[in-house]
Length: 333
Image (cartoon, rainbow, N blue to C red; front, side, top):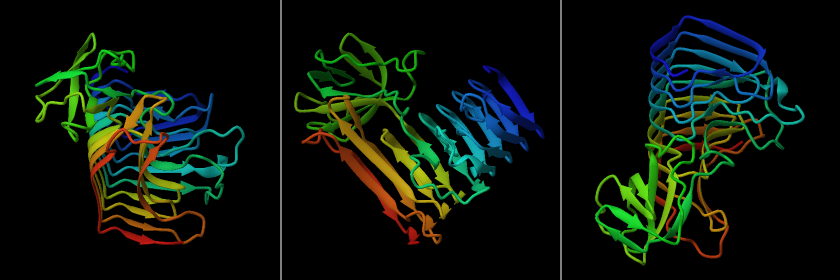
């Protein structure tokens, strides 16, 4: 943890039945040609965490996991290339359920995930009652949320003020995150997103001036971007119940291109509003193109879905902007 200029190369890490590996907060970290093998877990834990690492190159590795999720949360400036991730489905009917995913990337930014294989052994997975099984998942922290929402009281060229609201700009206990975002979702200046660089009293400072300065007609949402400025391309997904899920989280500038999903669901983008939770999760500029999704075993559906789930009678603003779905091939089961 917290190392610089480190590498793993040509290792076999046989975890047996153990707690998760903490390989976190490393800078300029290369992991290549290494095998990670998990045959069980203590405390229902993941095989490993690479969370909060930057300058990460993870290439040519194999991971076999039976519980939890290979986790790349808050990773940035990273390349995940030509790896083989395998889920051992022996535990798909365990009680209590251990949430199992294949690649968790909450709050990641400036990452490329390409040329990887995600598959299943000791399957097929036929338990349709479990609420898990995403191959790629960004969920904005699950139950630990970072969002807020409100109405602009006043603004200048690079600030926004709302004395009626208190915003949590320290959601992780480490200070203001680099990728803390704000979006104007309705009214004057709608459609603009910015990074938040400071917060004092009731005033947010943004990283560059507004093109159109918001006013009292403007509704805004704040959040840590769940995924931004990233590319998921050319991966092969086989046998997991769900494919690529950007779920109830703020997203911008993401390409999902040329992935092949076989007998494992599809691609799901879900934006969300709840005034009671002070939560509004928009998505901007997501391109879903040239993916192939097919299901032939009669268990899972083939889909590309872009949905806005609103818990309230009236929408705060526009949730999905600049979403492109083009040239995808879907084959039903």
